[in-house]
Image 1 (tube, rainbow, N blue to C red):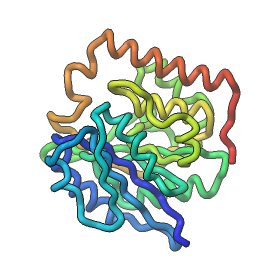
Image 2 (image 1 turned 90 degrees about the vertical axis):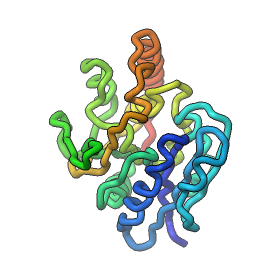
Image 3 (image 1 turned 120 degrees about the vertical axis):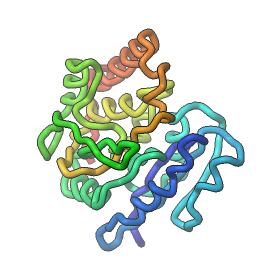
Length: 250
């Protein structure tokens, strides 16, 4: 029987037009013998505008549900995550060649590692890409390292939550993505880092599309009062998990 990686994508109408690009990048992934992927696309809301953009492929599952934000959509998608690992892929982003195989290799090689991230390039509207100079070194990330960097750098982590690859059981044990209007992926990243060692791949794993309709470009995303509240609960959760001393080592 084939072992499976489940790709989880939350989507709403503005980003649906990019699903075909995401699908193309997924089809170009090469996995080791004995592995396959299953793409679960969960619409944040209902209606007829997203479905026409969903690829017609037996490896793709499309579901809809009440609108609650991307964190709720991704957590609902876990109901159909029938594999050992889950990989985040935002609807408007694209995987880089080899991304899935590298993530998989890191976690299969060391059972103490519960999650992986990778280098990101911003994909600009003109098709060019821009990197980030502050990436950590290729290799393991120890417990609490992401939280401390994030806290010391204006709530900016040294690794990108949009590249997360993790053990499905660990994501479930942590309750999935946080119930926040934004930063729900950072909340999961810090919770993972509080409970398990991670891995960073210095090879590019994701092309992160920059465009006017993305959620992080909206003014509400940086409104001070809400941002401070989001960061407070994200930090409190991570520190509470660390305080209990639970270690997810399979």
